[in-house]
Amino acid sequence: MRAMVYRGPYKVRVEEKDMPPIEHPNDAIVRVTRAAICGSDLHLYHGLMPDTRVGHTFGHEFIGVVEEVGPSVRNLAVGDRVMVPANIYCGSCYFCARGLYSNCHNVNPNATAVGSLYGYSHTTGGYDGGQAEFVRVPFADVGPSLIPEWMDEEDALMCTDALATGYFGAQLGDIVEGDTVIVFGAGPVGLYAAKSAWLMGAGRVIVIDHLDYRLEKARTFAHAETYNFTEYDDIVVQMKKATDFLGADVAIDAVGAEADGSFLQHVTATKLKLQGGSPVALNWAIDSVRKAGTISVMGAYGPVFSAVKFGDAMNKGLTLNMNQTPMKRQWPRLFEHIKAGYLKPNEIITHRIPLEHIAEGYHMFSAKLDNCIKPVIIPGS
Ligand SMILES: NC(=O)c1ccc[n+]([C@@H]2O[C@H](COP(=O)([O-])OP(=O)(O)OC[C@H]3O[C@@H](n4cnc5c(N)ncnc54)[C@H](O)[C@@H]3O)[C@@H](O)[C@H]2O)c1
Ligand SMILES: [Zn+2]
Ligand SMILES: [Zn+2]
Image (cartoon, rainbow, N blue to C red):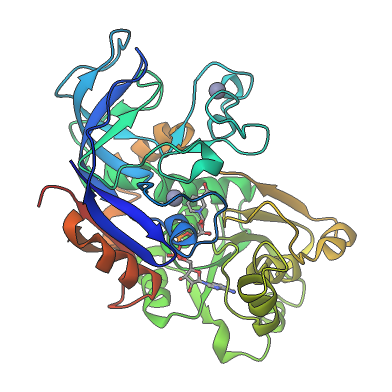
């Protein structure tokens, strides 16, 4: 079969790989019909995720058709159209029993620190991902769901991570009616978080980025107020001015460890590797909320030390909520919102790319070329 493979930082290509076999009675093999590239894949692509091995296939956002099932799979049959959540999880451990699917204890040798995702390096278990013609789906009775008849396939694809994560980001903001919410980052996660914040009662939603075409999308798709941080000496001061000098009630970090905006942080993090990433957006979030406000961190950070303004967070009495998203836990509400027309997830998809051209897709999404917001990959085309 054809599959995307990692060859080293900034190098991916499509290669011939063996078909994934059923390795466990509860596995399924899924023929991928649509996959997507996530901002998280860019951290792998840039070589920033530990233990990303040459030959690994990325891709934790995908939908497809069941090709084969192991002998103990009960909930799926060959030919079913399925959406597969980005997390791999057992469904029955201490954490899964509490809905913490992204913190499953049974699917990754590094499980005390991190759960598991498809195609997300050996740090999260080394499972090959869905940017390929076929993918092995472990715990096939637990993760995948049938795509509802009424649901657009690309809306289903967005539920497998980006939309679920934006929605989760807003949830972890503990938004109460009338709150002012600042979202850092106007990528797919930030756009969905901004849109979801309204659904949770926000009175005002502000989105910050430095890419004007994405801020334009934040205005049209998420009806947000927008600020380009490069246009202000200090975006935090600007946020104070915009919020009666109190600060916002909630801030959502939808940027993560590769944030732009501070040369010093960039050099110490990305170039010198003195810290696990550049926490510029997280620090702006800490500084932009009022005392006793809430921060929700959806952006990805490495496990090691970063110069986060933890003292300020402590002294201000902030609540910091964060996690990798337990995707499927969000689905019942997302399905309702999509069916009712409150959410139209596929509106942020900008590119549809054949699998054979995925290297160009990574380059375009990474360098933010051609007004790219969300690239979808089509195997077999
Ligand atoms: N928690 C989870 O389960 C989960 C799931 C999906 C993605 N993520 C993470 O969420 C983050 C966003 O993902 P995405 O797909 O939207 O990525 P993306 O790369 O498309 O978007 C990131 C956006 O942040 C902007 N940005 C950079 N520095 C900034 C700053 N200092 N302030 C404000 N904006 C800034 C960029 O210009 C870009 O538009 C990534 O770190 C990704 O790894 C986490
Ligand atoms: Zn992702
Ligand atoms: Zn589990």
